[in-house]
Image 1 (tube, rainbow, N blue to C red):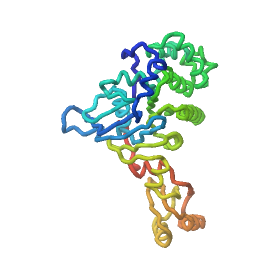
Image 2: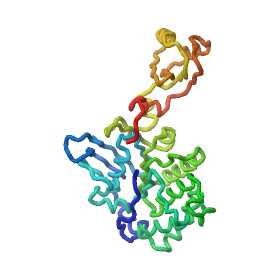
Image 3: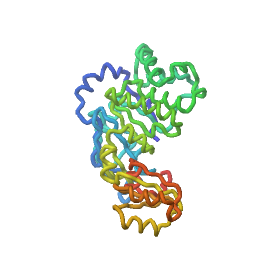
Image 4: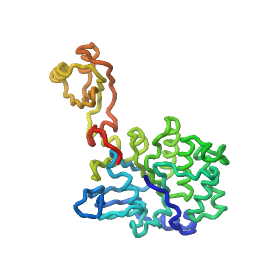
Length: 339
């Protein structure tokens, strides 16, 4: 989890006013990581948490980090924020080398941690006001920003509510609004919609899309492939601390999986299936428990055979290939324990 650590002294200046010239002169890209390495321990023989990881986040895009549990996603975000030291490589965030100028970079960065850490003793408005003070904003500046943030997060009617009066979705939206109090150029989010119901997720997706469209740079990790496919302009899939592949969702799907998928849920005779596939267009089959995933560019013959009810096939589903198919092909279908 990425902690929000505003207590580390952030200079008492108004980012929106004082950083204008810096932001205008900041070199592209917004984030650049080159050859990033981190070991589990101090000894050089220790296995690598991050192993020669390199990627670039362009200004104004939404960039996603995808990977199984323990792949190195949160470690990477913490390193970007100067919260976790690394053994080798280079990180630049908004033109600032990390860790040497991590505090300057954090002044222009908003952070949405994996778990909400709102202050339960304060109201919605007080949480925003106190966090604004951590960034050195003056009281009138904070007062001017709060109404827009409440409207953005659909919490205007909850302005004076205490945190324990909010639903999980409301708390998540407040955490997002809080991360925007300093008008950041870069928003870093660690699994921003984990634990939310579909309605809350869709509302947050809409808010994040609006931020991206307004020119903010977004960097996120997520386990929701539909979230990554919907929000991200580009993605980096990592596993065991290494980059596996990078590209837009459409590029990754086209590169790694066939365009059509037939999911056979259970009961099919595998010998019959193999014989059916052998006399038709190419089909690649993956197995997960009793479920079979048949990947092909031409599913018509297989579908026709399945519709006859032959060989005891249970329910089946025909759908386009998606990012989850790519993710599972590149990182495997085996369960990963939390790291």
